[in-house]
Image (tube, rainbow, N blue to C red; front, side, top):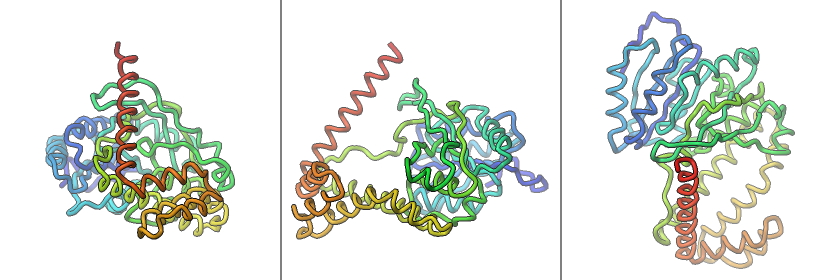
Length: 344
């Protein structure tokens, strides 16, 4: 569906990829923050719903129909839920910009976000393949406070720098180039942590830079983030899903590094994560694999107490579920304290 889209116009340099899924309470405000971008030549804005089961798509469709501004706007919907990696692949294939700004269906972009990103890209001679920015923390009630500072990515010049210390990034405040995506190809469909993947890709190519301004109000954890496990079965399901996401990230990074001859460097940097994933894979497997021998084997490369804790949680998942619930309660309490401090 198109809105105010003149086929005679030149393709915009910048596309905004707006990804939403079951974010009905937040998606209108989030989408409006993208539609109201100013100080920049017309953007290509693609509002995309990943087969939501709530009103998310209807809200996006109404906004696109009503839009009368300068940007080229269209709304689309996946026929079935694809997940983040495959959703990105579909959006990138359907967009035209050379610089791709990401936006989530529950976050708010500053009115000058796209303008500042393009200015930073131009200042780099358009050599940078990823532009990040700081964010502002935002709670579920729409109130926020402190700035979330991401790392200055200009300090990471090559794969060796990345292997020495992986940068802290947040995908909700990133833009990346089409050429970096074309160089490495589509994401594996089960990739969820695309922020780390995009950052590594950029460092392996033309580099990355950071804008030290909070250009996104970030709903930490996301409106669609999973809740605490309520019982043993849900704890195991949640752990398996997290394990699959981590394995997908590892596999994607190794494939990308192989394409540019940097697999050995990247694999060495990921060794701890690979060993951790291997233990969890064993403990999530057949009952006969869930042994103290697995813990002792893994503890040669991983902290023993961490290995033992995972063994207890996965051997007796009702204990893991209780620990997960306690962790969630502590997190909620800490957030409430922060909110009271900001809004006495």
